[in-house]
Amino acid sequence: MAQKIKAIIFDLDGVIVDTAVFHYLAWKKLANTMGFDLTEAQNEQLKGISRMESLDILLKIGNKGSLSTAEKQQLATSKNKWYRENILKMTPKDILPGVMEFLETLKNADYKMAIGSSSKNAGTILERIGLSKNAGTILERIGLENYFDAVVDGTKISRSKPDPEVFLKGAQELNIPPEQCLVFEDAESGIEAAKNAGMKTIGVGKPENLPKADKVIPGFQNVNISIIENS
Ligand code: BG6
Ligand code: MG
Image (cartoon, rainbow, N blue to C red; front, top):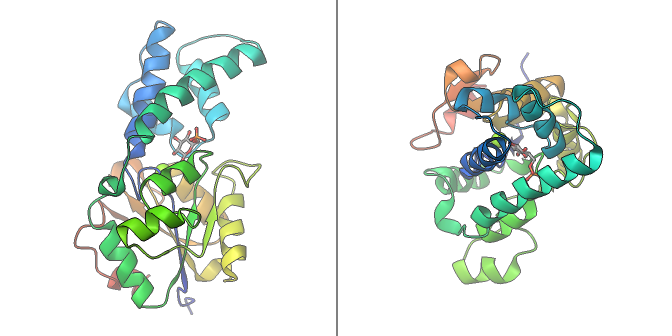
């Protein structure tokens, strides 16, 4: 019999906030400085993957042969600088439509909740949008309680999605077995990571980009809790 879902793990970029587009714009700018372009379709390969691994994929797309570690580090630093210029402007208004209502519904239904992100900038984003455990002053100012019982991000993992590490750590911190966890993800690498962890998956985005997800929703507007109860 299927296990009852007790915990929900959310990816951050592209699920809670639309930072996926900021990542895309920064990678595209980097590609352009090197004389090639990055299309939205090619960008799908970069979603959910760590910064340095994304850079390797980008360099392959642009046929940029072997660069030294120092050169690669410099390129990744430029990309992150452009990306951070955008995330530092974020406010709670940047939380995607329907997300807060859905978190509130899940909290009232006693689900445990965690963030599972590959990003090393996750802490900054969560602070900017008022959802960080450590952002006491922001939380007080905007009157939001803390929804997440655990935050596992790129600073806590050594293997990037599709490796299941980020989600397994999330489940461990929540003290819930993986088979009772459900993951919301916008990246195919993230869906694979959740599946590799033995978890149920709901893709957020276009079905054609997320063929391995158990279900796909376009976003959280008008999403009913029954989507979880029926998983
Ligand atoms: C993931 C994004 O959440 O984080 C990826 O989907 C990104 O696109 C990865 O490359 C690493 O992010 P950061 O912020 O550490 O460069
Ligand atoms: Mg994502």
